Length: 167
Image 1 (tube, rainbow, N blue to C red):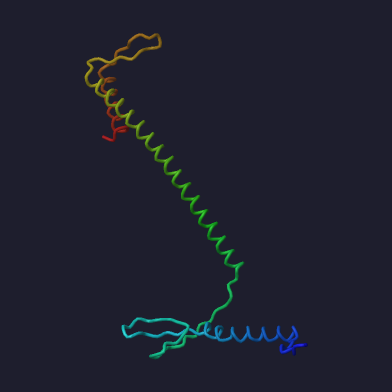
Image 2 (tube, rainbow, N blue to C red):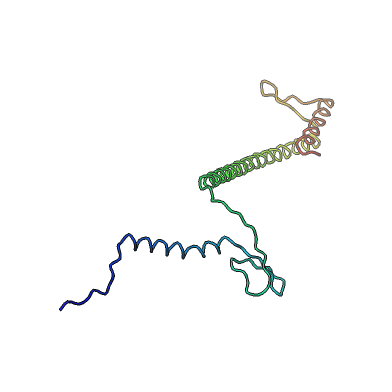
């Protein structure tokens, strides 16, 4: 015995059309809701922004326009910022290195100046304490300074203290 065919055969192209139409219809309400933004204020005065208008109260529909992001422009901007940041970092490192070198040089100069000051003070003290001063001549013999030469040597030693010690 043959059973009657109760199922209707629907062509595949028609099924595709129905499926496509159903899918588009399902997307339409969601697309329309996403394009609207509503602003409303609750009883506490707090503003709220939503894509669905509130059931109670008034809501202001905001006109918001948007456009697609240019990915290449964003990438270019990020690359430029990264390059600028790296250049600034390198510049800061160079400045810090230069400052450290300068600080080291200044410390070395200050150390040398202090040594020169101490030597100038010792020389000045020696010239004031001594009754007689001498210099060695070409043969290594002592030649004693006259009173005028001693006075000049003491003035010169005082000038050296002023120069190196600032006093």
